[in-house]
Image (cartoon, rainbow, N blue to C red; front, top):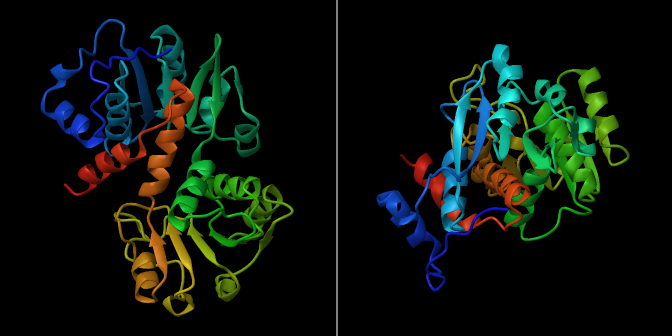
Length: 306
């Protein structure tokens, strides 16, 4: 159980709490010898926004916890996994390239993680280390928040067949999406995602956008500092004002796909929302407390504007 450090229940302004904590950490008497430590592991990790998001959440809830980013190469994953137990880490986020390989170092995984063969959130259940995947549910929560309604019964096109796409498709099925059109370059990979999303999912092409309400880009096309930078996965002329276009990329904040969608009058969102909801879900899993979404959005937007 997390320790509540609240001394001023009357202060209900989350932004004031966040700003005060950034100016003077002495407002909260931590870290100490009893502070619970949470971490994210990956390689590279310097770009991670998770510490900003989750430390803001701990501060806003006045919880005695701290979140750090740890660079762990592939060759050190096994020893790092042992460190979760020996160091007594209270919870762990997992990012590339460890989402699959971490599984062999855990006691068990959730059914979702088993089906995806992927873990990005590790938590304790009694004395066991459990792995879960929050990618898909985070995307659905973000889309529904932007839409102001459920994805149930809606038609969705998902671009990509990688780990993110698989997690998103599974979550869309669980959320009751009416039809999920999978678009990818390799037929075999597309078939596997379709099978995962059965019976709602089917193979398709971007030219079927006219029949779809929601478009989700789960590829790296358009991401800065990659071979796909400056490109869009969809011809601009296929985008219409009735579409809702979600790009899970947030570097840059406005990708070529989102630029084209906005020019067509479509509603759009980048991957910041998915990132925040992902962290919020982990926060709830670890602490049992509702995540302060407004504070977390404020924290990440403060970082991305720098």
